[in-house]
Amino acid sequence: MSNIGNYEERYKTFTWEQAERELNYRPGGVLNIGWYCSDRICDSGKGDKPALIWEGMGGIEKRFTYHDIRRASNTIGAFLRGLGIQPEDRVCLFMDKIPELYLGVLGILKIGAIGQPLYSAFGDESLFVRLDNAQTKAVITQKKHAPKVRKILDKLPHLQHLIIVDHDGKPLKDREIAFSLEKSEPVEKLEIHPTLAESPSLLHYTSGTTGLPKGVKHVHYSLLSQYMTARWALDVREDDIFWCTADPGWVTGTSYGVIGPWVLGVTQCVLDAGFSAEAWYRFIEKNRITNWYSAPTAIRSLMKAGEEIIKKFDLSSLRALSSVGEPLNPEAVIWSERVFGKAFLDTYFQTETGSIMITNYQGMKIKPGSMGKPFPGTTAVVLDQKTFEPHKESGKIGLIALKPGWPAMMRTYWNNEETYQKKFKNGWYITGDRASIDKEGYFWFVGRDDDIINTGGHLVSPFVVESALIEHPAVAESAVVSKPDPINMEVVKAFVTLKAGFTPSADLDLEIMNFIRKKLSPLAMPQEIEFTDALPKTRSGKIMRRILKAKEWGEEIGDTSTLEND
Ligand code: PRX
View 1 (cartoon, helix red, strand yellow):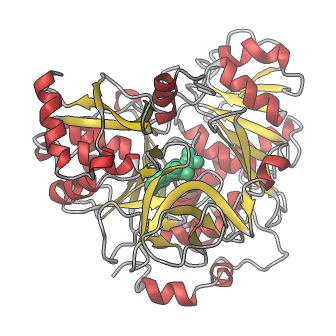
View 2 (cartoon, rainbow, N blue to C red):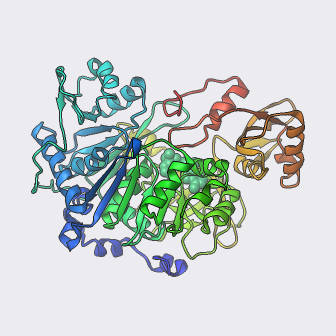
View 3 (cartoon, rainbow, N blue to C red):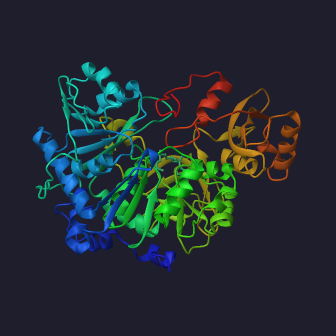
C-alpha cells in the first residue's frame, strides 16, 4: 500500500492543517526548516540513524548520522553568526555536491539567514548577476571555485565574506576566510533563530527567455508542502534509502535533496561524481537504494546506454522511481517498467511552486505520457488563454494555472515584485506551460508557452513529436521547434541525436520519417530532420528549444547563463 492510499479520497479530505498538526506546528509559532530537518529527528530518538551517505570522485565515502548533521549544521550556523551574518542576510552556497553544501543549507536556515544555492559550474558572469541582484553578504565555496568569486569581488560591495571550506593554508586576501567542518570544534547547542512561517528561507534563481534571471523567494512554511509531497508524491518511507540526483543549485535539489528526505528522517544518498550509467547503477546497487528521484534527461541517457549493462548489477532494491523537470516521454515509462520492473512516475513543478504540484502517485493507474493529477490541497486547471476561465470540456489545450495558497508557493521575485504580480490573472497563478485534462482528470503536458508550434493555425506539441521520434530505435534524443515557412508561417523541425552505432544518412532520415508518420497527424510531421551530436541543455538537463528556434528564425538567443556548456 502506498503512503497516499486512495488518491481521490485524499484529494477530497486533505487540508494543510493536517500537515501542521503532524509537524506539531502551531500557526503563529516558530517554524525553522533547519531545526525540523535535524534536531527534531534527533529529539524523536533517531539521532543515530544515517542521514547522509555521500560519495565523491574516486569512490571516497562519508557518512553522517542525524546527530552528525545536527552538530555540523550548528557548527556552520555558529561560524556564520560569528562573522556577523544577520537574519535575512543572503548567504550563497557555491559548491560541488559536497557534504558542506547540504549541511550548509541547514546551518544557514538555523540562524535565520537566506540560503542562495548556485551551481558551482557557473562562470563569473552568471555568478555576478545573481550575487549582485541578491546583495549577497557571504559566499561559501571550495578553493577550486574561489577564483571565480575573486574575479568579481571588487564589483560586489555587499559581499563581505568569501568562505573557503577546504583551504590549503596559503595566505588569504582581504574578505577571505577559511572554515573547516572537520577541524572546527563541534557545536552541540545552537540557539535556533525563531523564524516564523513567513520568514524567508531560500532564494533560487531561475532564468526565463528574456531579461535577467529572477530570484524566487521561498519561506520556512514551504516545509509543509515538501513534507507532504515527499510522502505522498514520491512515496518516501521511513526505511527508504533515498536518492535525489538533482544538484541543490536547482530547486529539486533543495526541496527533495535536502528538506523532503530529512524532515521525514530518512537516509539519503548523494553521488558527487559526473554521470555515467555504470556509475549510477553501481551506486544504486552498493547503497541498496529504494527510492530514486531523477530527470528525463538522465533517464534518456540511461536508455541510450542500453539494457545489457543493467544486467551486470543487482538493482532489485529499487521500489519507487520518479522523474521531474521535463515531460517524461511514454517510451521512458515503458522502458523503465521493462528494465527495472518499475515505471518512473512523472512529477511536475517549478522553481516558483517550490513543491510538486501535479503528479502520478504510487498505486494510481498510470497513463504513460501524462503528468498525473493535482496534489491534495492544491487546485490546478487549464485556462482559456483569452478569457482566463477554466476550460469546461476535457481535452482542450489551455494554460496550466494554480490557485495560490499552498505553503511552498514563492512569495515574490527578489527585488522584482512587478514581474511577480504579472504571473497572476483572474485569481490564478499562471505557470507559463500548457496542457489538456482528459475525462479522468489526468493532465497531459503540451509544452511551454514559448515552445509550442503554431503551424497554419494548428497547435503542435513539441513533446508529442519528440516522444514519437524517440520510439525509433536509432534515436537517442530529440528537440522539436518551429522554423519559418511562407505558407504556414511556422512548420515543424526536428533535431535528433543518435544512439551509438547509428550514423546520419538520407536513408535513416527517410526511415525515421516513415516511422513517425504512422504516429503523428500530418500537421505535426516535421518538414525537416537535422542530425546533431548534442542538444543544448540547461544545467538541470532541460532541452533549451528556444536556442535552436532562435537560430532557425535568425533571432537573438537571449539569456544563456544556465546553459550546460557555457
Ligand atoms: O516547463 C515546465 C518544466 O519545467 C518548468 C519548471 O522549470 P524549473 O523551474 O527549472 O523546475 C523546477 C522543478 C522541476 C515547468 O514550467 N517541467 C518541470 N517538470 C515537468 C515539466 N514539464 C513537463 N513535465 C514535467 N513533469
